[in-house]
Amino acid sequence: MAKNSKVTSSSTRVEKPYNSGQWTAARMRSFISSALRAATRRWGPKHEALKKACVGKKLNRATGKEIFHYKCAGCGKLFKGADVAVDHIDPVVDPNRGFQGWDTYITRMFCEVDGFQVLCHECHGIKTQNEKKERLNARKSD
Ligand SMILES: [Zn+2]
Image (cartoon, rainbow, N blue to C red; front, side, top):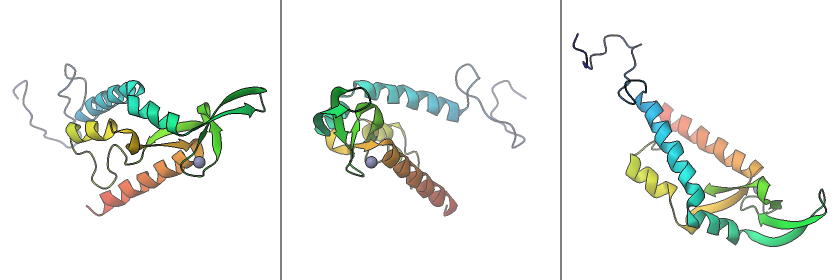
């Protein structure tokens, strides 16, 4: 067999065309997506969304200090910064369509302020679970 042959004789053999033959396409995709996700920390509209959800300073009973609180777009309750996440209203990967290529991925990842919402961890968890169910259902109907 030629050295660079793409023949896969058995279904157990996984192609590793990336990173000097060490990474599969899936591993490569997760490498790129985590690098892009890290870049959202420097994405202005994400910070704007957090600012928009800020209701000002409130007393934190645990510490006795006044700290900024944020309104959850799901349950409407107020939380301190550590207890909220900025969420993509439309998930970066559409649960029904799956990965649509990097152009789509990047457009959805780096959306404008209206594409973001602030959710408490509980509401964020519920949304994530629902998207997971949607994704599994979409796969079943393939
Ligand atoms: Zn909530």
